[in-house]
Image (cartoon, rainbow, N blue to C red; front, top):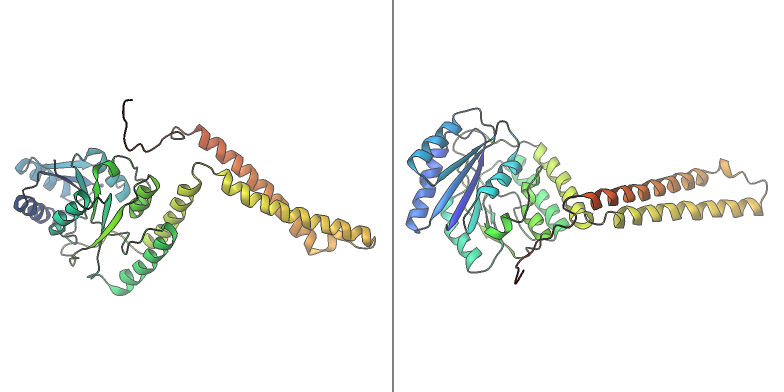
Length: 313
């Protein structure tokens, strides 16, 4: 199969027939074998009925329905498990992503050798105040933290080689950072393509201001896990040791001062409480590191490695 298109959706009944017709036209024009995997993330409208109807008309249409809303990351993860195409695309169901971009993005994966090609909505048709400005700040922080130079981490239109989506797990709200997860798994060639962005035709956006707060928290989480997930003591032990040494040297200074001046009241000095606090914090961080190491060693994924090829084994 040439391409799989994974489309997570929530209450997008009006746009689904039009989106399917658009994908069908592009696939037919470029003679691509395809599958469209609609993942209904707990819709309360007629979305699932429409998906069932489309699957009757077109056997290349497949569907996954969640009992309730689990979020975009869960929907993408299940869609990735089901995808069989050599190149796997993700796109939103609201008609803001253009299927006309698929052939060129597929070429970049197959011919240019990219592991991931991310769309860049260079010209947007969103509200400038509520989306464009926060999005620029968010993407700048993501670039700085991850070292991946993409203009639009949150663009729903992306292309992946099959081996990428079969070697990563998307969970929580990490769909924004699939390129970061892929880089962590060893897929380093990540490209970008300016794509056409359509104005929303039906319904309303399902994301509010909280996505930016959650996005930054998720960025901090994945940055920490990618660096210290297998060796947490390297983080907790380092800062614990530094805090403990600061407290220890401060205590030594106070003791020496007491010997030099017997009338010197150690417990009346702010430095005494600072030294005591930093030593306690240092011990707690060290213990946290030990506990994190025990958890990491007990994890079923502690010896999970992303193997590119095998030969004779």
